[in-house]
Structure formats: C-alpha cells, structure tokens
Amino acid sequence: MASGVFIDWEEMTGQSKFVIDLISFPIFSAIAGLLTNWTGVLMLFAPTRFHGFYMPGVKTIFPFLPRKLQILPTFAPGGILGFQGFVPARAEKMASFVVDKAIAKIGNVNDFVRELEPEGIAAQVAVVLKSQLRPLVDELMEKENPRLWNDLPQSMKEVVYSRAEAQLPEISQRAFAEMGDNIEDLIDVKLLAVGHLRRHPEQLKDIFYGIGAPELRFMVKSGLLGGPMGLLLALYLQIHDKIPVISLIPHWLIILVVAALIGIIVNVIAIKVVFTPGEPMPRYKYLWKQAKLAKRQDAAAGDFGHLLAYKVLSMPNIARELLAGPRGDKTVGMLTEILAKEINGLLGPMSTMVRFAVGGKEMDHISHSAGGLALDLAPSIVEDESFSRDQSSKIDKFASDKLRKMPASEFMDMLYSAIEQDAWLLYAHGGLLGILVGCVHLLTFGA
Image (cartoon, rainbow, N blue to C red; front, side, top):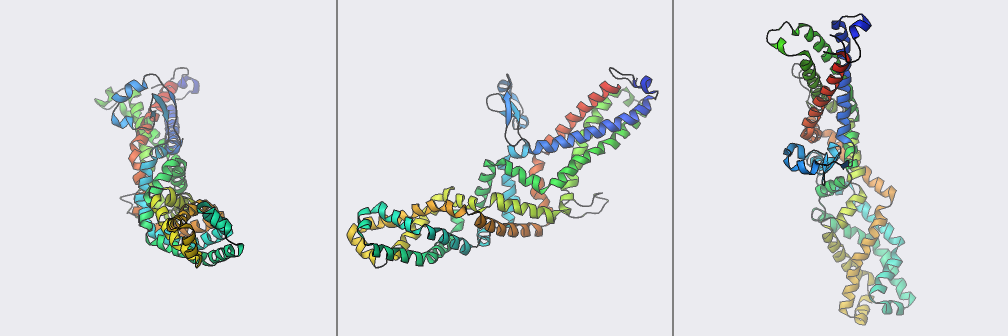
C-alpha cells in the first residue's frame, strides 16, 4: 500500500503506487543528498570551539567505548556531550599537515626571512628606535648609575645622543645580519605555525574554507545526485518481488539500506570529484578528468598564500616567536650580546671615563641591560600596520608563486590528506542521515 501513517496517497491522488514512488523517491533522495553534504560541510568547520552540556552516564560509559568513538569531537572531560567541527577539533594535527604538506615545501625559515628583507626590517627598527632614542639612553644610564648620568654635563649627554643617532642604522643592520646568520637556531616555522593555529582554530578553518569555498559549495550541490539514485530505487522496487530469494527481503528494509547507501555515495562522489585526481587523467579512469580544486590551483594557491602571509607567518607572529617562543631565550641572549658590543661604541671616548667612574662590573651591567630594553621596543616595531602589511605582501607573493608551481598532485595531497583522516565520519554521518530520511519517507508514503 502506498499509504503513510496519516495519508493514503493512492486514494488521495488517484495515482498508482508506481507513479507515487517515481515522484517521491527522487525528491526524498535529492533532499537526503543535499542535507547529507550540507551538514557534512558544516561539521567539518563548525563550531570552531567545543559546545556541549552535561549528560548523565556519559562519563561512566566513555572508557568502554571503542577508540574510534572516543576520539570523536563529541566528548569532553567530566561527562560533557557536545560537538566541535572536525577541522578545529584536530587543530594541532591539521596544522601539522598544513606545515608538512605546504609550508615545508614552500621553503625553510631562511627562505621566508630573505623574503622579509632583513635590511628593510633593520631600517624600520632604526626609524622606531630613533624616535625613542633619548628616552632609551636615559633609561639605560639612569637604571644602572643615575648619579653618574645626572652629574654628566648636558653637552656630554648630547655627544652620546648624537653618536647613538648617527650609528643607529649601522647598529641595526649589523644586529639583523648576525641574527639572520643564526635564524634557524632562533625560530622554528613548524612550531610557530602549529602553535598559532592551535591557539586560533578559527584561522585554521579560514585556511581550509578560504582555499576551497567554490569546491565546498559544489560538494553541497552534488547531493542532488541522490535524485537519480532515488529514481533507480523506485524502478527496482517494481521488480523486487519477482526476484527469487531476494524478494523475501521486505520493501522497508530495502528502502532504509538504499537510503543509507545514497547518503554515503553522494559524500564519496563529492570528495573524490573535488580532490582526485591531481593530474589530468583519461575519462575512462575518471569521468571528470581532474579534481575540481586542481583545475583551480592558480586561484586557490593565491588564496592560500595570502592566508599564510597575513594570518600565520605575519610579522607580529614571527616577532612573537623570536622573542617569546620556545627559543626566545636564544634571541634575547643574542640581542644582549650584540648590543653589549655596540654600547661601548656608542659611549666612544667616554667609555674609559665611565668604566673608571662606576667600575668595570657596573659598566658591563650597563651594556647587558640594553638587551632587555630593546625587547620592550619590539611591539612598537610590529604594531606599525603599514610596515607589517608591506612585509606580509612579500611573503604572500613568495608563497603564492611557490604554491602555483607545485605539482597538482602535491597541491591536492596538501588538503586531501588532512580531510581524508576523518572522511569515514562524513560517510557514517551520510549513512545515518540517509536512514533518517528513509524513515520519514516510510512514515509519509509507506512501503
């Protein structure tokens, strides 16, 4: 009977069950496909932070769940049940993929620093320092020996100021040249990128979504392929009862199984069409010849390079990693050592008099204090928005050009390898949602 719980469709429409199935199955299957792919894309990226609520019993049963279920972004300590997007939930792992598959192939830390033009950074540092030079010298001297500095005639102080201002560009250039020679010891690009993206999962989402926005929209629309599959199901059900043995399987079970398969298949097709193959292939192997994202590599590479330059490998992030990262103590030590050498040159002929007046140990203390004072100026340097934008534009061009020249197969692997880790979750979600839509169809139209 083509009748649901509330409506007898054959009586109401005057049509046969066959006609009703031919109309209803494609519509419901297309809806199932769209819902599956739309919610699947949403689940990849949203929400960026875990949201949940306490559920009694979850804490008790959690240790007994299979490992595959325990790692789902649906559980939090203390019996909390909720959800977080697959990509932000795996922020550290996803960020590692981005670094290993993309940033590491673009270049090493020396390549990125060269693009930043250390000479330009040094010149910017000199400009910033020049505006704060007198307070810096005053603070340095007053901190270690205020009596000596206060007793010095203003004319002699002016000599120190003038020497400092005149030599500042050269000092800055020498400091950055020395840092550049040791940059691999001072900064780790992978630690920088992974640490930053772990702290800002929304930016990781922006990277994936920003690169593949057209492809993700295609993935949603491809759910409409469920329509033709529903039509095939309707046609099959007309001959199902005539097939020996198989005819023993009830219609309702066939509908639910096929609905689950449709939910899975539309997901599989969407992911395959978007990400494989990287290189053009004959149509007898792939009807679509080449992955949609690979066809758009030039534009996608530009989007990716832009996001890397302005969100991840930006000047503020690099400066923060240099000064406050895991190797920040090395940077501080090197700056202190460099400036300690330069302070004697700044004092010039006065250094002997200062050393005599305050003692050698006090003089060394004055020199080494410069390192800490210089670090206080770092925020002023990177907070210059036009300067930071100018440096990011160099990284943007460098990274985008490298990504465009990357073989299409490697470019695809860079993103696909991250998503395929949790592809089974999308397929499982598609199957479950297909069964749900199948149940609605059974309740509405009957078996």
